Image (cartoon, rainbow over all chains, first blue to last red; front, side):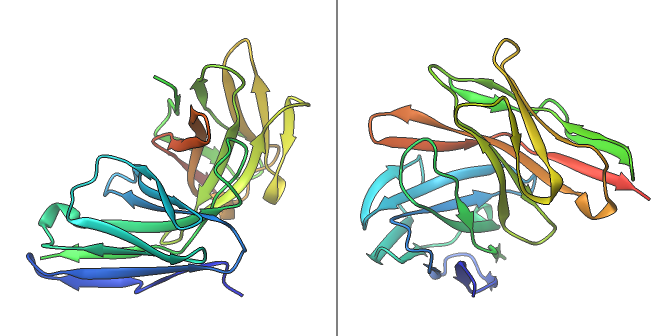
Length: 114
Length: 115
């Protein structure tokens, strides 16, 4: 059973389009995250939700909007895609928001904007 | 600023030799430190963490890490490297206060194990 899953795995689209990435975890965790990994493999947190509430919102453009319909799902919608949005996006989850909790990552979604 | 640093972009080691991937931290209070591994075209996988207790922490796939408070380091080690250990390794810490701790990752170290 896949613990953290994301769809789609690959996403190729043109500038200006709107797209969504879905994430689901079956670990029973109450905290979920979105990360962006750039071409140099640098990993940056974008958002975090705890029990469907937004708790971390790093300096991310308003074009990015996360949505958590329930504790097991955290989707990412991106409006008006730009070339600079090309990256690998990872979803992750953890048991809680405390300092000691490790995270479990999905396989990633490679977004290419042309 | 609270953070972790990985001073080496790449580490090369021969199969069968011991390996070390370095991480230093700058954290106020007690540090809670993590190591993750990322194989090509995969998500990160949790290897091990230090919370309190023994300075030597054992994790998955034969990896261990040594916490050194005086040197503010948390180096990842393995006694005998395998070619299949070749991957990208990230050191991480969660920084913040109250109920919200933001995960912060080092820039990653590419480990290459030569046959």
